Image (cartoon, rainbow, N blue to C red; front, top):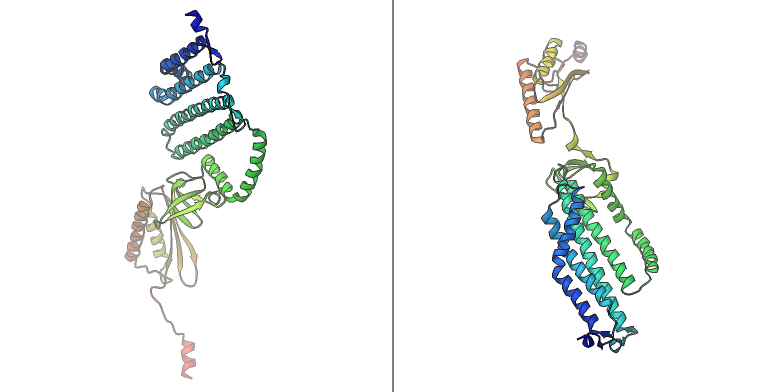
Length: 368
């Protein structure tokens, strides 16, 4: 038995083959339990910082790719300890079979390691989503989705660079230099798109508006339905769907109507000159009584101007941040009540009647 175990075959003794096979078999059998144990240890460390982590979700997302990575890593390292058979080390296109297998092992390790990191990013995004759902601002959820995809792209790029470096032996410093020159040219060609991308970051962090806000920009008023990386989609009050580049949303004067504390109503009432001062005073006092209601937070009634054609009464009132429908109803009721008051006081709006007067001097001149 001893002689058989120390018999050499393909540049390795049989004992080494059995040891490597045993290590690989052991890891394959216990990788599930080993990965769960390591995942539980990591979970306990993370749970000290984030108390609301779901244990089952963490095990489901992290333990399986962690077990696969450990199995691949131990298998490649164990096989690497064996001497590559000289009889199988042929050359294919200036690459030996040994170099090809070494590159394949490095490729598999990098691939499973990147997969593990991608699943970790998914788990972190789930945690952040749970916290974001506890806030009333829906922009946080969209920001998490954006950064999750962003970091995944960065991670894939890093994985490709690692494959080029450790698998193909490329000099990535020269590659990065070339990519920086190409990137500068692409950035110059896509300047507007990059400006919109930067503007999207400003919107996400500065938060001048959020999803569901009613905004006014470029003479358009509507509800924000989507904030993308390049543009913002708005459902206007005419029920049309417009797309505004994010750069214009940041650079333009934007009125966030959802953040207003009050709604303003205004009425300029022009009364005929035939109205006497006593009636005007009764009218202004009556309008003040009309505006004295719980829907109106503050109001002002002022005999603002006296000119050759009318008396002008300026009426201003402010309601709370109600919906447009409720505000229109309140405004309509106020206007009806003012009209009824004017009917009771027999006050007419300027221009409703026209008086024609002929002076005596003009008539005498006409008879001559």
